[in-house]
Length: 137
Ligand SMILES: [Zn+2]
Ligand SMILES: [Zn+2]
Image (cartoon, rainbow, N blue to C red):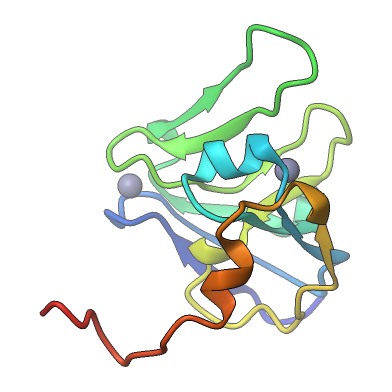
C-alpha cells in the first residue's frame, strides 16, 4: 500500500485517509450521477473498503437509501451535504468522490462512462473561456 492520502467534506467535520494504489477512476455522466452531484458528472475512484480510515466525523455521515431498486445510493456529511466515501451496496467496493480528496490520487480518470447521457451543455463547457477566478468578482 502507498502512503495514505487525506480527504474531507466542505465543512471539514468529516475527515478520512485512504491508501492507494486505486483500482479505477471513472467520470460518470449518467442522469442519476448528474442529479446526485448537481454537476456535470460524478468523479469516482474505486478501491477496497480496507483502504479507508475515518479520522473525524464518522457519526455525521448519512446514507441516502433509494426507494426503488436501480437507483444509486450515496453518503454525505449531514452538516454540509458534501459527498464522502461509501461502500457500494451492489459491488461492495469503496467509492471515493475524487473531489473530496485533498491531495492528488496518483491516478487519472480512465473512462467517461455513460458518455451518451452527458449533459447537453457539457461539450460547450469544455471550450468555454478559462479564467483564473470568477469573472464577476
Ligand atoms: Zn461537512
Ligand atoms: Zn452514474
